[in-house]
Amino acid sequence: MTDHDSDLPVTPDSDAVHHTPATAIMFWECPNCGQSYFGEQSPDLCDYCQDFTTWRLVKQNRS
Image 1 (cartoon, rainbow, N blue to C red):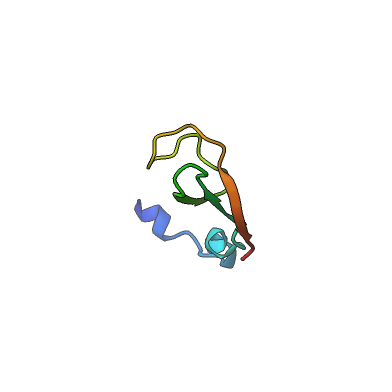
Image 2: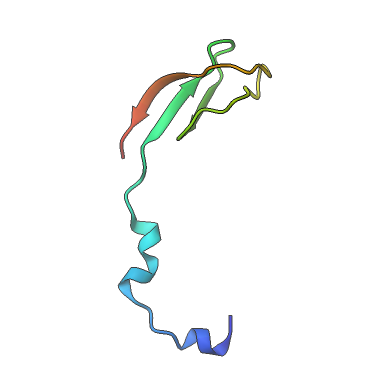
């Protein structure tokens, strides 16, 4: 940060990224071992049982 940066005006939109609506959270479950994962997309590999699997969508939360 420079001295010039501290002189820039702060606008109400400057912090907008922190106040945007949350995206949908997907809850996934490995059909082999039951390990759960949450994210927009399911992973390719289960970290617990180390199997490449097709994850099952358990539920979708809307915030």
